[in-house]
Image (cartoon, rainbow, N blue to C red; front, side, top):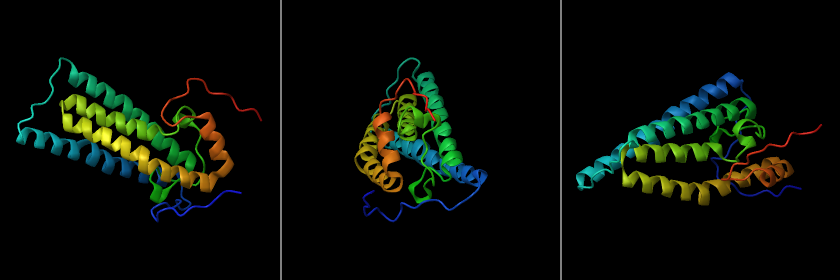
Length: 186
C-alpha cells in the first residue's frame, strides 16, 4: 500500500470543476505570482542595489537575451500551467492541487517544468536588468524550492498516486529533460 504522511494543511486537492474554471483560477495565479516574483521583488532588489551604489551589470545584448529567455520560459510556464489545469482537474498550487496525475504536455519531458520555467524567468529578469541581487534571489529560490517545496510536493503525489507516481519518477527526471518519449502501448 501507499504510505501516508503528515503534509501541511495547504496541500488540498481541488474541488471538481470545469476545465474553464480551473484555467481561470490558474491564470489568476499566474498574474499574482509573475507580478510579485518577477516584477515587484526584482524591482525592489534593483532599487536596493542602486541605493547602496551597486551598478547594474551592462553587457551588449543583455536586454535582448533576457527578453528572449523570458519569453521562452514564459511559454513553457503557460504550457505547463494549462496542461495541469486542463488535464489534472485543478491548478498548479498545492492549495488547489490537480485531481489527476499529469504526465502529458511538458510533463512528458521533465517532472517540474513550471519550476524550471519560473527559475528561468527569474534569471531572465536578472540578465535583462543586470541585477546581482536578482541572480542571488533566483538561486536561493531554486535551492528553497528543491530542498523544501519539492520534497513536500512529491510526498503528496506519492500519497495520492502511489505506484503511478513512482513509475513516473523513474522515467522522467526532476531537472534533466528527457529527449525521447516512449510511446505507451495499450
